[in-house]
Every structure is written in structure tokens, then in C-alpha cells.
Image (cartoon, rainbow, N blue to C red; front, side, top):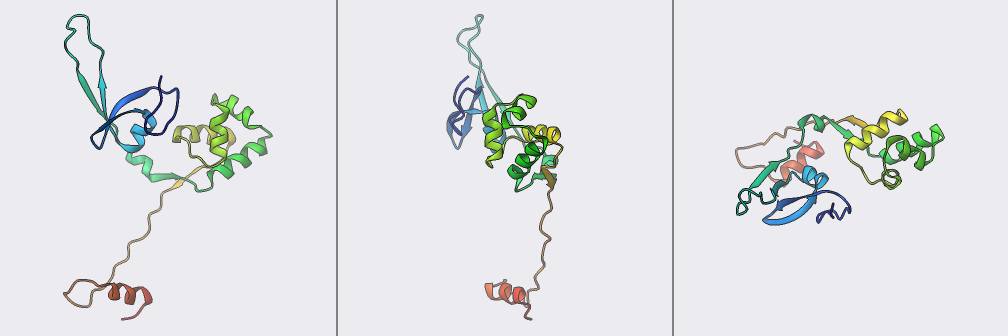
Length: 161
């Protein structure tokens, strides 16, 4: 157990990661969220004490996760859902086997891991995830073969021909 050199979280297991050429001891949450390469050195073995092997892991974001996103006011929904059940933050933390600090942070707007949000969502019978709806693409007519200018975009935005 150590301290993550990226986010500062204490008492977590850390792995040696490479970030822009620098090597830092990072927690798995930072590794996954930043898609970092992990360099993990194994301890020297008794049979061949001179060798050290480096194992690389690469974490990639699950594309299916990108179909849903956390609602912007998740912390308000969590607090209201908990209060509707008549529970204190400590009660919720006990029921979910989480730390009280994690519940307090979530209710103050610090977004926890998706797995924690799913647990909260299920126990309070609330909805914290919504479908990720991307903005529709707009096509812009270019009057000539020259490149598009800021004026062309402004005319298109204002509805001028």
C-alpha cells in the first residue's frame, strides 16, 4: 500500500506507470482513467537473482461505457435519494460497504468510479446514468473552391446566403 503520485490518494496499491517519459507510482483508477502504460517489475527470483522482467499492461477504455454518461447533477440526486429512504450518509456507506468519506465526496460533487455510482444507483433506486447523445453535425455550404473563412461560417450561422 502506498500513495498515488498522480492524484495523491493514500493507502492504495500502486503500480509503476510511464507518463510522458516520467515514471510514477499510480493507483489503478488513475491508470484506467488516463489510459497509461504500466511498467511492473517483478521481484528478483531465487533461481536467477540477476534478472528483472518488465511487464507492460495497457488499459483501454471500454467503448460501451461511452454510450452512457453520468448525469450532471448526480450529487443532488444521490443526496435526495438517500434522504427519501431516511438514511444518513453513514447508513448508506455501511449498506454499500464503502467509506463514509466516499459517500460525502459523492454528495459534494466529486464523481466516484462508475462501479461505485452503480452501487449507489441500485441501492437508492435512482438513475445516475443517461445515454450519451452527441450533437448533430452541421454541414456548411462553401460558395467557391476557396477555403472556408470565418466570414463564411458567420454568414452560415446568421442564416445569410
